[in-house]
Image 1 (cartoon, rainbow, N blue to C red):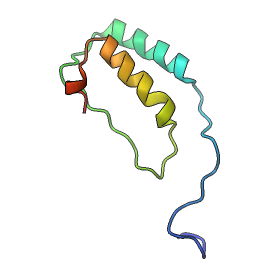
Image 2 (cartoon, rainbow, N blue to C red):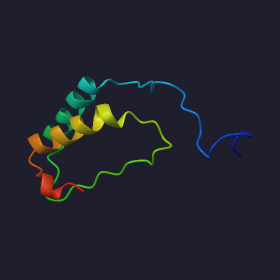
Image 3 (tube, rainbow, N blue to C red):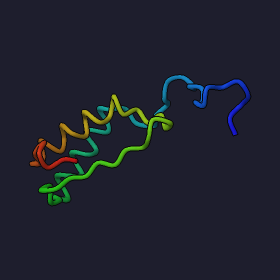
Length: 78
């Protein structure tokens, strides 16, 4: 139940604390993609709704860039 007087949204708690920064995420993802060589002909990216603060503005561009560098195409990423 939300606190009385709210407009139906939970209050923001400030910046998202992450255990990994975007550069390290990109390096680890690149290493994984190089080792595993997954089929990237169809890529699905699942994201949480807006109530989850997940650092998407910092991490999604890195994810997409690394997928493209590994052989995926924008047309095949959903």
